Amino acid sequence: MVQFNLKGITVVPSEKELVDIILSRTQRQTPTVVHKGSRIKIIREFYMHKVKFTGENFKKKLSGIIDDFPRLEAINPFYSDLFHVLYNKDHFKLALAQVNKARNQISKIATDYIRLLKYGDSLYRCKCLKVSALGRMCTVIKGIGPSLAYLEQVRQHMARLPSIDPNMRTILICGCPNVGKSSFMNKITRADVDEQPYAFTTKSLFVGHTDYNCLRYQVIDTPGILDRPFEDRNIIEMCSITALAHLRSAVLFFLDVSGSCGYSIAQQAALFHSIKSLFLNKPLMIVCNKIDLQPMHALSVEDKRLVDEMKAEAQKTLSIGGDQNGEQQVLFTMSTLTNEGVSTAKNTACERILGHRLKLK
Ligand SMILES: Nc1nc2c(ncn2[C@@H]2O[C@H](COP(=O)(O)OP(=O)(O)OP(=O)(O)O)[C@@H](O)[C@H]2O)c(=O)[nH]1
Ligand SMILES: [Mg+2]
Image 1 (cartoon, rainbow, N blue to C red):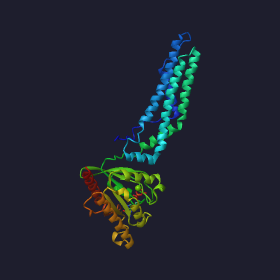
Image 2: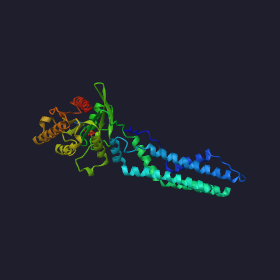
Image 3: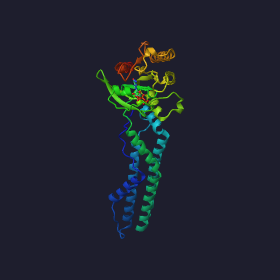
């Protein structure tokens, strides 16, 4: 699997910059004077060289752009899906295809005009052909202006994405919005994720690292997910879904038992059941957060039943995933405010993902 270098893509110039770069290079790096009295062969070669040189440079620059961007089929499926969620795969491929088409057109213009120049019979005629060739090349470049601008935007956005290593030991934090995912992330890593008392504070994936027993673990904080049909989910939620679907990780499903997040336990349980297929084959833990506001023993009968249902479901997922010790603890309680249960949850998650990976090996 090709490692996808998010930050290594060079700046994509605008169409104007591209034309300026290439034309000034032609001016600086090719001979500048030819005498009227020179033999016609010399004059033709003089202008042919200019056309060829300009065409090659355009082609080199465009090839550089095409090669720099990742081939979506060759990179890790997590990244190719995330790419699709964020930038739309079709739009991206179309932009690259247009750059490629421009490259071919420029190639053809260069060959055509070089052929015509072979029959140029005067300095004036040869010069006109050269001007026309370069002009047509620039027109082609102008045509791909929007594609270049789009690719540059993708590049800038990509450079700001977190560097997630899909093959590392990973702990993934998910759940409804506002349940305290980022608070937990900030407790166990040195990441500084924004935590606010409203939904969708976290708008993209965040990565931090934590150590346990001399090993390093990658912790991923995801944006909150709402319980609604797949096609209604927004880009922010889809980032979480992509991470859940592709990363081999221990999953911590956060449950706000106090309901202060704005979602009742029933709503959170509905979300759990709607995305439970994504938890298959992963060590899953249900973390009941904010027990400082709502102790577990004071839960209503109905809420208790919902939590028990989720617990049973989680245990089932574990045993389907080949985990024979079906009675593993899956329900944890925590308060990121008082620190109660924070380290237990973290340590257990680390042990589980380590054990899971060893088993897979
Ligand atoms: N009382 C109490 N409040 C908490 C606890 N954990 C988090 N909070 C508060 O809950 C609010 C939301 O916390 P965040 O960590 O931003 O929640 P989040 O799940 O990351 O939210 P999104 O990023 O919007 O999905 C903040 O105001 C926190 O102070 C807790 O254990 N007890
Ligand atoms: Mg958050």
